Length: 279
Image 1: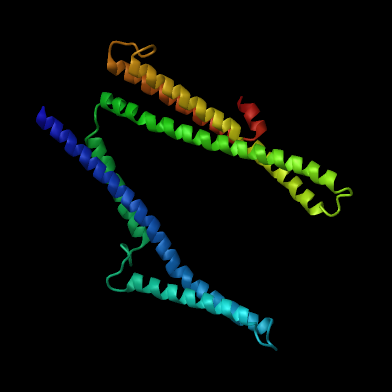
Image 2: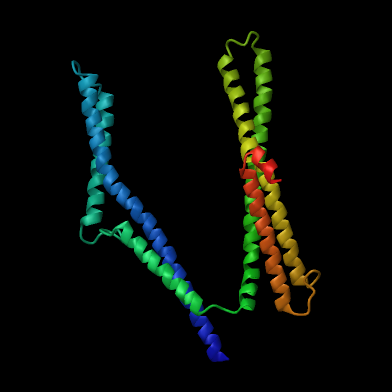
């Protein structure tokens, strides 16, 4: 029994190590992309700045002196871009580079990532735990899923409230400005801006539907939490004698709720006519 437990721990540690390696490679690829972008984009920006400086002198101030402020701005930009280009070149090609993947292509890092993912799949297939253990671990991940749903629900609820308050304030401001300035010629620009704000916010609220998204997310989180509490208390529909049967029912129910949530999100993303056809 002890040997089996030790073997399970070693396989778990191995899978965790593979996940860490994959996460590290993903971060390294992201960093390397930024490094390569800066390595090539900074000299190009330097050349463009020099050409713009020369072009402004030729086409604008050919027969006069370039303003000191313009020269100062261009000189500062050239200096900063030149220093950045030198520093990045030394970091890329110099000895003792602070960059972890200097002189390494992004394609090579992607290949390492593919190999690491393949290794993880093979090890996971070799050390796949029984269904009951996977169902039990699934139950332990559900509180994080509930917290995520509630967080997204709060985000959309706050977005909806912000849109509504902007609509209220802008609509009231239009009436107030119109009544204050009669005729409204001095405040014509303000009225145009407020009217555009009302139109944009109303269109955005109708398109993104933050209120409906917040309601759906909160409803799904409450339903999953209700089933989790029922499973922990052993009440219907999880009152079977066997824990394995309860976990199986619980996993199927929660996955059904998550599938319904994804379907509602897809319906909200469709145009109004498409939603009516789906319904």
